[in-house]
Structures are given as structure tokens and as C-alpha cells.
Amino acid sequence: MVEFYRDCEADFTAVFANHGIRLHLAGSMDLYQRSEGKALQTEMHPGNISISPAVVPKSIQYKRGGEFVLVHIAPALVQEIAADMKDGSLDVVELQPAFCTRDSHIERLCVQLLEEYRNSDLASGINAEALVTQLSVHLIRRYSNLRTSENVESIKLAARALQRAIDFIESHLGSDVTIGDVAKELSISTAHFGHAFRGSMGVPPHRYIVERRIELARTLLRDTLLPIATVAVRVGFSTHAHFCVVFQRTTGFKPSQYRKAFLSGR
Image 1 (cartoon, rainbow, N blue to C red):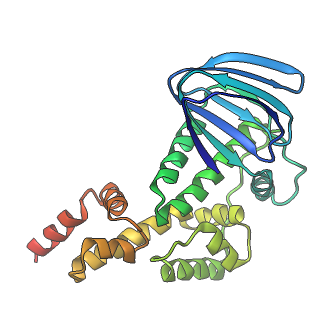
Image 2 (cartoon, rainbow, N blue to C red):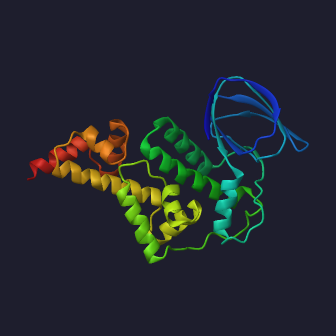
Image 3 (cartoon, one colour):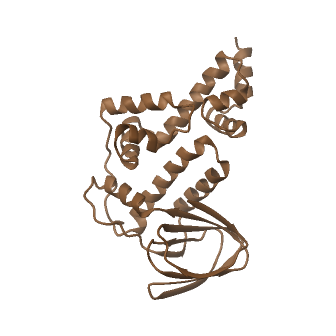
């Protein structure tokens, strides 16, 4: 879950079921936090990050202006990803708290998650899944009781499983398909599928799906006279604007420019 806050104040004591990652985006904010007998107070500035582990009682006070995004991640998801990283042999993952730190990787991922939340596009779901997986892996490596463990070894899908995954993706390019949907089709966990697909194809599954959608869009722009808004829907984008942004980012052309260039070259 992603939450965005602007110019708000709070004073509460609570126990949260999910891990919380707070990224300060703009302005400044006085923040006081007390947890596990430790009290910390500081002024948050853009780029400052706090990590609050789940199921740990904490008291929080903040006031003054500013903007921040709060990302909630279920402990079960982090545990599942960590288990896949360690091939199933793993104790409970415990995240370590961090207060007013900086981490460019977490900052980038949180900003991208906020962008996907604001897009609310069919493609946003699968992109959000991939971003949360990356964020969870980073938290495990840098901010958990497993932070000194070795990196994930490369794993691959069996040839038949890989073909099933590709066939499933191809048949659902125009729908709100997610990485979890493909993993369910193969009866494996989402995290394991993500690692294994990348090991087999050299790219993460969300990028592969976006690339296949854009390739299908190219074909439709070349071989049909369908309106561009219709093409966008056919390849899994619910808005014309988001489709144009992704198409141009991938090909270097706006859809209209691509169609015009192809027709003029005939």
C-alpha cells in the first residue's frame, strides 16, 4: 500500500502489521519517534528515509509542513522473497529500524511506486509488483538480520515452464496481467518466478511484458488504421496518455510519429 501526505500533523502510539518505509519528498518536518526504549527527534528534509519494522510498538509525532510518501510492505511478502533468495532454508526475516537516513536506491523505488499509484493504469499493477520486489530484496540485503548474506544465485526456469510463461503472457497482453498471475499459472511463488524468468531471459518479467506490449502496438500501428486510443487499449493501457509516454520512452517516437514515418516510407 502506498500513501501520500501533505501538510499534516500527527501524535499517536500504535503497532502496525506491515513494515513501513517513509520517504520525505518536499519541505521540512519536525519528527519525533520512540520505539523499543529509544527516542529520536530530528527535522526531516527531502531524501530522508525512515524504516519501521512491523509489529513493533512505536510513538510518533510530526508537525509543520512538507510532503512524504509512506510505503507499507507485508512481512509475509518479505519472508517469501527471502525464502526464495535462500532456496527455502530460512529463519524469520527481521528488519532493522532506520531513522532519518539516506538511501538513493530506496528513494528511487519509492518515487516510482508513487508514480505508479498516481497513474492507475493497467500497466501500473505489474510495474508496482516489480518495484515492491526490488524494494524488498534491498531491505533484506541492507536492513535485515540477513544483511551479511550472499547475493542470490542465478536460477532459471525449465524450458517447458518458460514456454508456458511466455504463452500465457502473449495471450494476456491486452489485459491487466501481473507477475503474480503468471507465477500462479506455473504454480510457483511470485518472487521465485521473477528471479527465474530473469535468469532465463536476461530481463525481468515486467520489462518483458512492457516490451511485448510495445511490439504489438508497433504491429497494430503499421498494419491497421485503428485509432491510437484503440491501439492503447488493445495492448493493455487504459489511458491514451500513458501509452504515448511508454511508447515514446521505448521507441523514441510518439505513436503518431511512428505511424506517419512508416506510412511515408512505403
